[in-house]
Amino acid sequence: MKSINISLEMAQKVKEFVAITQECSCEIILKSGKYVVDAKSILGIFSLDLSKPLTVEIYSDDCADILAKLAKFAA
Image 1: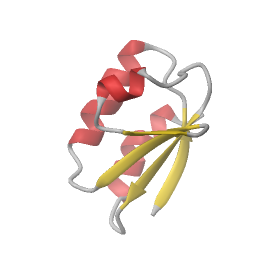
Image 2: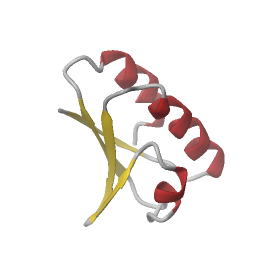
Image 3: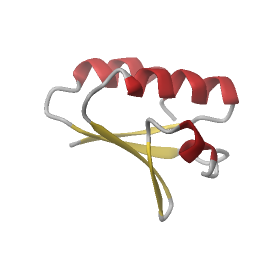
Image 4: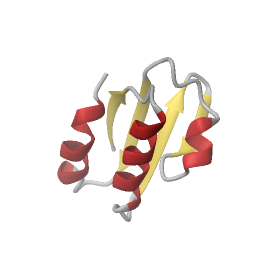
């Protein structure tokens, strides 16, 4: 498992983030405080408090390419 902190304060960033996560076949979750949602679900993401940094957890050993793509969202 790998994790990074990101910021998704604008709707356009959420749309780009979901497009990237949907390319990956592994499980990816997004955490905000005690709430956890599927990172591939745009509705789930919009249910979180996007004004604060979020934690992305990727459950795959081979996720360097996804981490590189998500680096632009780093908080």
